[in-house]
Length: 367
Ligand code: ATP
Ligand code: MG
Image: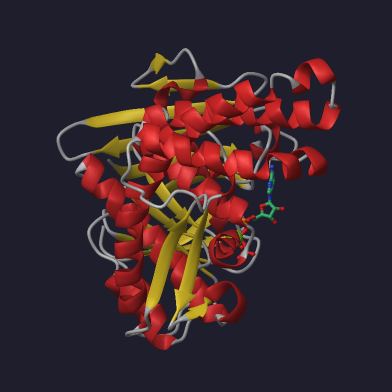
């Protein structure tokens, strides 16, 4: 699905904005605080049913207004559809004029992959950010995986309570709950391992392309007693249990769940050095972007259509060759790139929109 038109009414600082993007590269240019990220946020909201930065719908409604409205026309070349979200006292989602029961019902009608400056944390930040990235992408691709993550999270929270409260009766159930945690974890690992195999190969390829040959490598790390990622869930469960038993006393002493796939990680190295400690700003940005392009390709293979790619402020800190890759080298699918400015001759986008004061004040490119 591609976005054919978008109308925002009283969404963030957009009082009444109409955007008619092209089917490939769209560049959203503008000074700081004009409403570029707000536009990407609206597209993300239409796709996922939630914002990537607001906790409450009220934050998305223009200051002083009671409601906001997003109307999008989408097309996959064969069929068109109209998706609308109204944000107010209650949220309403309409697909082709038909009200959806739950706000999430229309989520997933089209996929988006978003890069934003916070994603530099994929390389440099805490491991929880990398696990969130894996879990979010995999839950969209494999709904069963999402259910496993929910079950794992529930069991993990329960075990944390047992360890913290230290009630003797509850401590007696610790092994039972941990056994269940191992069983669910053992079913999650194969999903993560196979996703990471594809992610690793593609991320390494994209990183080399963008950087002109730097050797990035990405490795999936799970519990150390898991020696064979292709083992059966029964064997994986046994390996997780073995690790738990070895660390049970330490878990009881510390009050923390010290072992399990909730501590899995992805390790990035560039030319043999750990990227978290040694990579430059531009290298970190390139690796994070490569990761997102890899995610986009994995979704394209699964859906047979590329997701809409949203690149927020991706160009800063990149040298001319890396900027050229972003502006010219990303092909096959609809892309939205925000930037404060581009150098003359750099633009390869078919449509360039200038955003100012919450309005599209200029549109260049063929229509
Ligand atoms: P930058 O280049 O700095 O990232 P930007 O063009 O991406 O800038 P946005 O993040 O889209 O800027 O935000 C533009 C403005 O929207 C901000 O100045 C903010 O104050 C304003 N804004 C955010 N929420 C609302 C709202 N609910 N109502 C009105 N204005 C809002
Ligand atoms: Mg912005």
